[in-house]
Length: 355
Ligand code: PYR
Image 1 (cartoon, protein in one colour):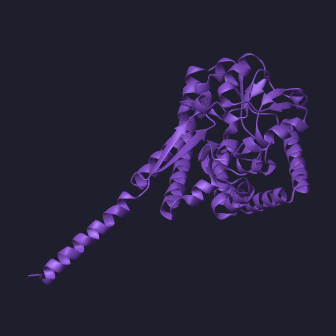
Image 2 (image 1 turned 90 degrees about the vertical axis):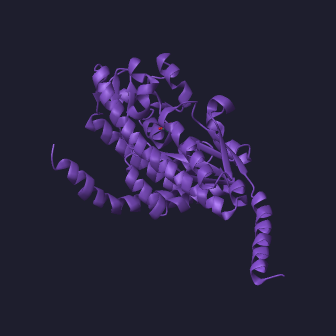
Image 3 (image 1 turned 180 degrees about the horizontal axis):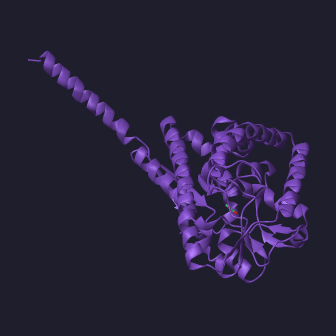
């Protein structure tokens, strides 16, 4: 007899049978990511791996992201082009490396005398920064997301002391981004060199000085063995790395996987920001104890004033030359103008209130 209960069971079994082909058809999306960084590159190697792991677990295995370091693809500064062309689906790099290709990408890493990491994250996520970044990247079939922040960077490793503005003239320094242009205005010769080649360039004196990151990364690079002076920073107060995503790849993902990928990138970026501060703290203590000969210096006020003046002039030039550059720079300046007042009352006043 076909009872009601049996009918229900049959319906349930039928439903189960109907679900399973759907589950079987649940596609695994395999994405490939290219990093600018070499293999085993400390804190910078973390965000891509953490993001891939999180995305895989949160999607129950439906997102599989494999990672190639620069040792594999041999093109540290080719990441933009490779992701744009779809040779890779994703990248992990830094936006200011692309200024020679797309000048307006320059403003989404960090700016000399600009926002701190907390302020800049506020600008990205609540102050219109993300929208402006997408406006710059979208014409290139790309999306860009924050990829982890180093915090305030050290001003770099120098063979000779910088006592006057004249000491910058003719100085060959590895320094990317807007800061490089500021230094050029004061007569220095800035250049960008892939991270894997920095030590050799300074050791062989192809360059006189370099800035890389700060103790979180610099100690493992060994710069303290080949340059005596370690200057504090002015040029990169909040260096934000970058996840690049090929827009066509992203658009083809189901909506839930898009959300999972975006969340995984955001968590991985946040985590690197914390880890950078931690590693810098630990490594700073180690450096002071084990390498007491490293001379920590500040640029004299006269030099900082000249850098700041050149920076202001360059900002005005960039804004005058390009409408979108002006929109981005105005947005950053307005945001910082408001938020810095709070930073002053909160962080600055707190730190200044005691020794
Ligand atoms: C640099 O290239 O200098 C970074 O800090 C990422």
